[in-house]
Length: 382
Image 1 (cartoon, helix red, strand yellow):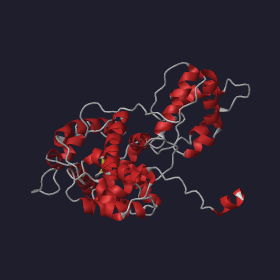
Image 2: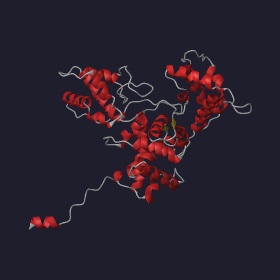
Image 3: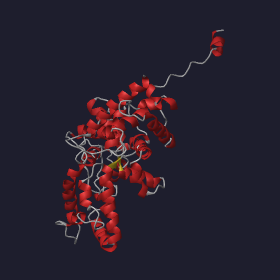
Image 4: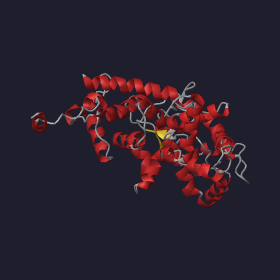
């Protein structure tokens, strides 16, 4: 009889999803944006919902608040954020780039870059240097530099091609001299946005301009922030990775475990290998690779350097966690310390940008975004 009653009773309801994972109705999306910071919350809500759906990312409280918190941290809800004093930073930037260009074989650059920037596209137009010094926003600088390069490519195509070929010998590219490397409301890294666009057949010439639109910056930003899976138990690590690179937080924890095994400090920056300008692993060994070799080549059945390099090259992928290098280092760490190896920790990276004043780190960035994320979740709960 008891079994019959149990069979006839309603099945137990599935456990409720955590609040952050619950879907958000369209009419409530605007609540993710703070009313005291965003006057036009409804248009922002329409765009963010459209972007998440287009990118096949669930419209949940957690995803919404992750994007909103990043926008608030990076731009204060501005599609083309003003950068106080950006015009005054130009001279320092010119000096740095001129030093880089002086390495180009056969091209004297004692004062060349400054001289070229002082030129005008027409007799009545402002010089490129004047436009750069008058800049108020990152787009002002970005567009000026792109106009400068486009003008000289059309005016002096052969000499410029020759110079660019020479520059590539020492790993330089004129487009890479653009000081604006992150753009828009989410300060998306331009090279990553271009990589995503290339993968999906989007015209690369449109990427930079798209980043200065609300939908464009959220599209590339949301993909960068949410369009990949990791085993993190807190969004703080994902915010750190947005700044430092895919799986930087996971890799920093791995580096800390390797450091414990070799008994010396390592840079906990989330980069396990060194990479060349094209993004391929370099032959020069990193600190982490050297330490991993020291550990794994002393085992009774040592791993070859070729295999270790091959497996560490998966550091920007989830699949690193299925490698022998990953599992062995974590096992050895547990055997030595008696502690479970952490999956993630905040990487130690100092930020470098002409748009930042004072010293800032990836940990500072991640913790700042997390505070805004928590405030957003509180708004959504209310």
